[in-house]
Amino acid sequence: MATLNLKGITKIYPHSGEQKKAKKGQPEKKTNLQVTDEGVIAVQKFSLDIADNEFIVLVGPSGCGKSTTLRMVAGLEEISGGELYIDGKRVNDVEPKNRDIAMVFQSYALYPHMTVYENMAFPLKLRKMDRDEIDRRVREAAETLDITQYLDRKPKALSGGQRQRVAIGRAIVREPKVLLMDEPLSNLDAKLRNQMRAEIIKLRQKIHTTFMYVTHDQTEAMTLGDRIVIMKDGYIQQIGTPQEVFDHPANIFVAGFIGMPQMNFFNARLTAEGGKYFVSVGGCKVELSAEKSKNLAARKVQSQDITLGVRPSHMVLAKEAGNTLSATVEVSEMMGSEVHFHANADGKDVVIIVPTMDSNGVHIDSFHPGDKLNLTFSSNVCHMFGQNGENLEF
Image (cartoon, rainbow, N blue to C red; front, side, top):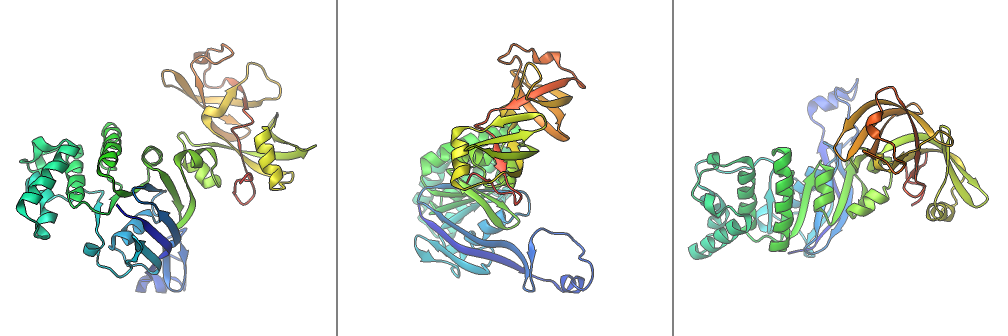
């Protein structure tokens, strides 16, 4: 177990000769990462304090810098700027083997000629540990991960999920202060990913170590992390608990990235009238809740054009038109207890999730492509974003 402190960590990849030449003409590849004379900035001033035994998840789209950050913590990438501390000790220049960390990679990286037992014991043999202690740790880890019955098998005789458990076992036998995991479930099918997520949660409860986990899957982030760090183009966008980033996204990017299906966005108007706030979109005008009005008033938010965000499950079907947003059904997906409508509303493609029978007694299966829907939304679950994309409430 250990604390981690990342203070302004930056990673710059120097330009190659070809890239320097390209600067004189048109660049060969487009990138959203910042490019300077020094090179491409993959991670920009990343600062985060991780508590002892905390489970932190770095999440974001491909190329956002999350794996690079993890590799800098591991010592596999040189830190271009900033400082990294493990248990209060600065480790920028400490060799990876001396950082007392272990890492689980996306590819299982198992030795094919070794048995499961030998794969798990290998890092301990390198440390020249006592044979009895090696045996104790390997069998204890195998018991924790429920792979004792596979100890005599070679990796090729195992399924993907079993191989990933072996890779995790090889990491935890070292009893590291910090366990780093770089998209460990991305090679598994959907059902197996769900099972392995549960196994990682159980593992976390058993081994009591500090976790730093990288994924592009926001479902993994929401279910595994004590806190989530959402990244884009090398920058941290928001840090918070899963519930915080879901309920109070800091900006449009976070709002669209967290939550499945993605949040719906509308061009709307925010109006301040007599100490209250209203949101207007299409033919629908909704008075915001007292809490939201209070938050906006505290920040002295004025009437303005905004981007309105409403999650699919927070859209409401109205029985009749009148102060509602009109939408045209394009596709309907029956999901058992609920229906997902893909529709066009006010010129935007939106998704609406409703029960198979709503509170007004409307049978959802009576709607077909081309039919009209009357939509509204609850005033306490919508999100207002200003011209710069930031959440106006916070």
